[in-house]
Length: 127
Image (cartoon, rainbow, N blue to C red; front, top):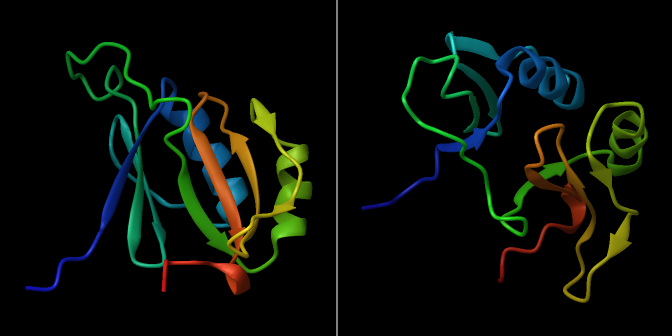
C-alpha cells in the first residue's frame, strides 16, 4: 500500500473572504464545493478552506494550534511575500534560511491559521 496525502482542512470563519485571500495568494480560483468549503489544488493535495457555520455544521470555533503550520512550496518566494504584504494576513515574517537549508517565511492568514511558504528549490523532506 502506498499512502498519499490528498487533503488538508484549514478552518476559517468567513468562506468568501477565505476564497478571495487564497485565490489571490495562490493565483488560482479554486472551486466552491459547498456553502462552507472552498478547495484549492496545490500540487495534487487539496487545501480545503472550511467554514463550519456556512456549511450548516454544528461545529463551534475550530482553529489550529499556533505552531501547527501548513507548509506550501512556491517557485518565487519573494514575489509571493510582496503580494502578501498587500493582503490582509494577520502576520508576515521575514524570509529566512533555516539550518536544514530551507528558505522560507512564516505568516498567519486572515483567520489566524499558521502557514509557511518555502522556496521550492530548497524544500527539505528529511532525505
